[in-house]
Length: 334
Ligand code: ADP
Ligand code: MG
Image (cartoon, rainbow, N blue to C red; front, side, top):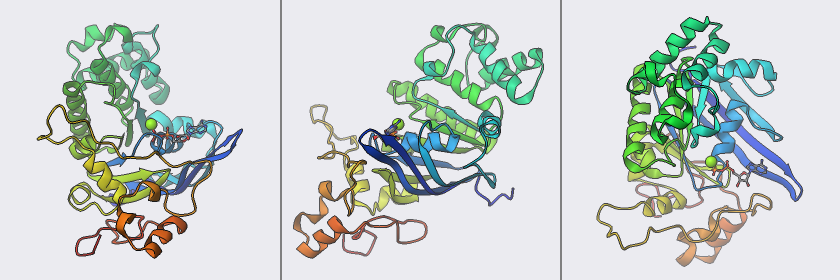
């Protein structure tokens, strides 16, 4: 794989769940790339399809139909037999979740679990795997790793447990790490430590990272590039500085407006975007964000009707496309 080839490339990804009320298209025509040593932040409100996207990349979608292309190191993953996917999972790509307890077995020590994971993927001997586990726990900043390796998941705090998950994920030296809301359940101080840890490990190992979050604050801390999702589609993509300085899509601007500010008084309630997420069961013909968009309030009727009837496609400058008929690019009237 050449240095400039992306580690992960996703094209026209669509994930549809059959439900009693009809097909639910949770992800629709999504595309993005992640490069070595880079972090892609995927941000969007709850229900926008972030987790479904990550599970599809990992090949963990159950009962859904997946179309499009997902290539890891140039190799097509869609349609790969389960056995081959299993081998790649953990070995080439690994994932951490919001709740580490859901992925850790309560009856085995954390050392045993990391060692087992390593043994499966590297066919290493028990002793070597155990040593590797202790080493991995040390690398993620767990004090006294040899002693802690003999403890059970419930003996760890939330933050330390997330470190254990990261140790497990990285024990097999994957090229891609997907972190799905890894700090959402943690308090702010611990959250900052975990994000710092991920950033450090990434830099040391040249990992490609996907950081999934509903929190633009997290994106600002760790992401190099950002993909904004709304209703299963990408609505804007940009380098992180550009996204914060010149958000082109009204949804991105609304997300930024809802970020707490340093000068906000404690009494002021957090601003949320009015309205509710779009229906995935019966998608509207036009822009999914139109009913909540602040822009059309004083826009001419014909512009408003375009937003309501014509689906905006991701378009615009190559490094900063937005799916909006009236994007707010620099020098353009919003
Ligand atoms: P988030 O951005 O919060 O991670 P998800 O990716 O978990 O959102 O889910 C996006 C949407 O996909 C959900 O709102 C739901 O409508 C749909 N969805 C997810 N999983 C299933 C499923 N197993 N069956 C039917 N619909 C699903
Ligand atoms: Mg999620």
